[in-house]
Image 1 (cartoon, protein in one colour):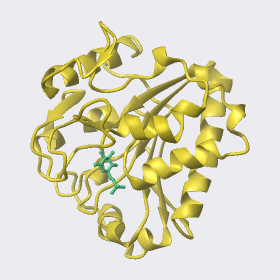
Image 2: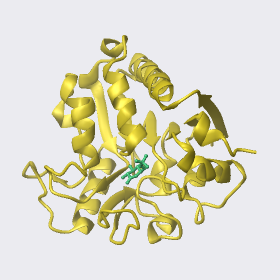
Image 3: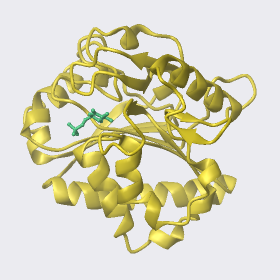
Length: 252
Ligand SMILES: O=C1O[C@H](COP(=O)(O)O)[C@@H](O)[C@H](O)[C@H]1O
């Protein structure tokens, strides 16, 4: 798996712009080699800022957005119209502004069979349904697709997706899990697990701000994944930590 590489930008604004340019290039490359691309989105402040920066990217139209599969690494299990939902924020930031194919937009907590959001009262069947949808797009013999790029924000305590330190999600071998007691609100969530994250060709962890500095430093100092889930963020080919100076300030 890809050894983590640290790339430091001056501030959060430049980080978002540079990561956006990098993402557009990665999607163009994937489409050039396979005719389509597969992208896993994240929520969080810098994750959504990145999508806004993609929308402003001069090369935006170099991507065929109708041939991108969009997945989410985690979701807050909230009503479809809640602004807590990572998917709603991503749609407002980017997906509503580019010609996506809705059949390739895979929201969590969306009941595919009858085409409605919030078809589930509980997160467990929603997690199981998402695992089934991933399996349906996976290569033969695999549980999940080989995502081209999987984006992850990071919490101050080192959570990625909705895998929190010492939580059951951090030890799960399922592809997707429900989370009932997230220490960060809202408490009810759906999340990828480490095996699903590590199936991606490239994993990019994005962090901005001094409050993320301990988590970033811990990951580069060899913390274990139960203490610091971000330490298990690894891609098959490449693992990038795209951070601003403040977030990198305590890396030894
Ligand atoms: O709750 C979540 O938080 C993390 C990090 O968010 P941030 O605002 O501190 O950057 C995010 O990566 C995750 O997708 C989200 O559900």
